[in-house]
Image (cartoon, rainbow, N blue to C red; front, side):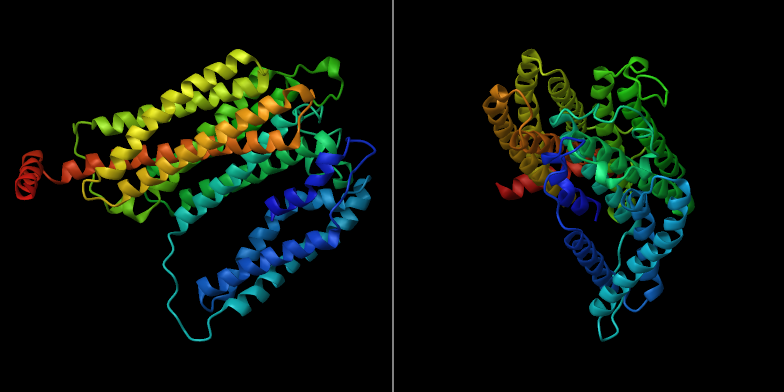
Length: 444
């Protein structure tokens, strides 16, 4: 719903100037119709999944409605606190009930007529994937902020032109203000989702180090938000006076790079939340680390370095940064292909490795193609003197694919460390070696 709302409201950002020209607007009825369709589809899936447990659908609807309250204030915002309180008393319960009602309608349509067994879903893994999806949406929205040079469109933080961030009127979100303020709202969504994940792990996860990693992710997202705010103001202040703020481009680069580290932690949580991870044998103390794992770890570092070089170029727009980014891309592609192909071909009898290698190889190819198109877009639009929507779309897509590529490399490195080392611990090396020799002799 948030992504759909962002896209439907996008014309205001592309055409508006932030003050008087709001541009063409998608009719509100169309927006609410799309939201209702999404909720009904979610209810349909919930009805098929929970198989006759309506209270679970209601809980899901309440969670969705509660998250949407983060933007409800912008829709029904008022100038005075008394008006806001009066409107909130009506809209908050109405929004929650409407969300639950539409999802329940979808659930009734999707609920199977005959009794069926409830689907076995790895709920913790699914929850982490939700947070990852929200984070990728945040990265895309943040990419448009950089692309349209709107990082300083809202001059204060955590307020927005003196308003509480969650009460800034939607009618004023035009031009660069739209891109920057939407980025802040998506950041609050990711922060709240991460808090929910950390609490869930604390309550349900038996492994202590996984519970602690969940809280590490929450602290990271808080630090990330603070870095984003200080990028605008330079210090903790509510002032809107430019003379009292000190925006920092260096913090903008660090803000973007740290977001990639946060995403990597979420990918780690996703991998270790799977049933397959739990079922694989554990490595013994003193077990040697395979060269494939080392290469996978090096690939993670190389991709992260490449992302930082790309962020430096996007924020500073210096030709040297572009050359460094292009040159290091060759290293990343070659190393990535070697790591991916080895995982794809040398699976050691474990299906997860070839699947991860195949996925990584496809992501490398797609990211390389997108990088080529981004370079063309930059060259074509350099003479324009201002951001062009087509260029921003391509470069933001390239940036987002870089995040997906980093997550894919982290995933493969995790499975390399767990599968290869764990498999070696489960079977003594002499036995494993003799089996490989016997297999080679029988093949000959």
